[in-house]
Image (cartoon, rainbow, N blue to C red):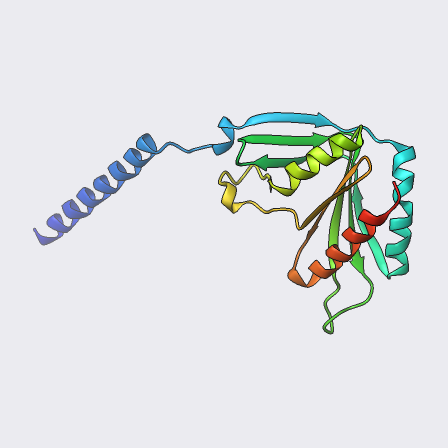
Length: 189
């Protein structure tokens, strides 16, 4: 008799939990915050003449003992502006990504590293416009829907037809992103 009461109580508890779970999803359906966002896709074109102006920057990194770990030209980057409810998706041949790592350790065994994403725009005014959008927005991940959970670029600058945004994996690399952002900003374009 006692076992029967325990089994009935467990079944009732299970039914209550199931009803609560089902009602939660009926009342609070999975919110895809990005479904209400206006999507803007921009195809960026590679400009070899303009890109040649960045070569001194790569030489400077080499002189400062940084090696190119990887480069990517086929990825796309999405930026989510939570204020204006817009997602900007950049892709095309004018989008480049380079990851650099120092050959010289700091603090014993830490090798600073950072990624530079280069977006090539058709005009200086367009680059300036999107620099502001990227600087004030979040890097979008399709698996995260809340704006406050997304990462912001570490450093964003524009120079000429380009927008450069830096990301790094730790605070110890931040002085390097600041330093090399300044180098890029001062390049004659």
